[in-house]
Length: 364
Image (cartoon, rainbow, N blue to C red; front, top):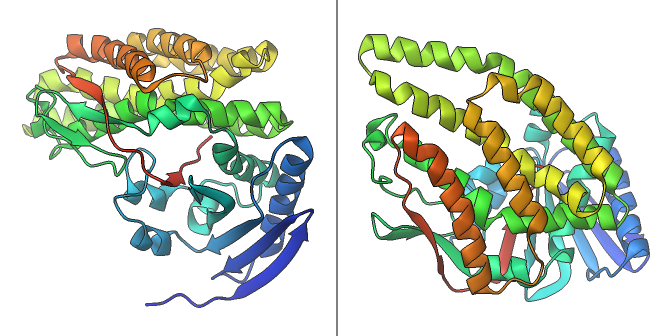
């Protein structure tokens, strides 16, 4: 069923035309006002390529999901993952005269962002940072794809799930382990440069407070979610008792849950170190050290620290070959953590064609 347009308006911010389209009737004005302030902030702080921006406020992102195809360069998890994103920026790398920023009201409300204007500002600022942060390294990242060396199959940016990673654990949860590992590896090595440079650009353009606010929310959510870690342990124990899960799989699944939930925070904190904002970075990490890492598998803290160091050192002018080597180092770190738990990670990064349409993610 087609969505009805409940709101349409045009706004002029400096030399940019802001077009607002919505299929919801309430809560529009605050979003528009924050978007206007974000555009003003960017246009006053440096180069701004857009002559127009379309802000599309939707109850959910099903209309976007239906339109995007596999040629789009999508965030980890593919097109379906967009359903769970609060904000998404879709733009054409070949023509940056405009962009389409989608707001997912359902997810914004679920995540508690709808009434937090500072969080909304951070989300919109981050999405706009992606095209502005383009450099040789981010362009090189779009020419790489993650391939399962054991299966001989590749998965592109559409987030397709690969076959087994050379282990027997694909039988657990109908292949969910393979999917979790693939999405995690994709995010940590293939999409990491885009997130790092987008976050760094936010700081460079004067939006460091917006990023810090989002990251504090992320760390607070991590502190809260770690208290529910015991629920997963209990559920896995029940499955072992029912005979639906081998007992030796439990340590691996717990570790995967820890890795999936927390190590990607290195993507948010490393940009502060890259910009010399050590006080902000260390304040975030102090919370992790005190309230999160002690409750996790011991490998998680060490992997986080190694990832952060590599993210801090990432250069903006990597060639495809150079980024392939850098990403291979990330995969080696991940393999070194998963191997002792019985999961043989045999991914590698290979060159692929460069897409022109970008569907970038946000979770700062």
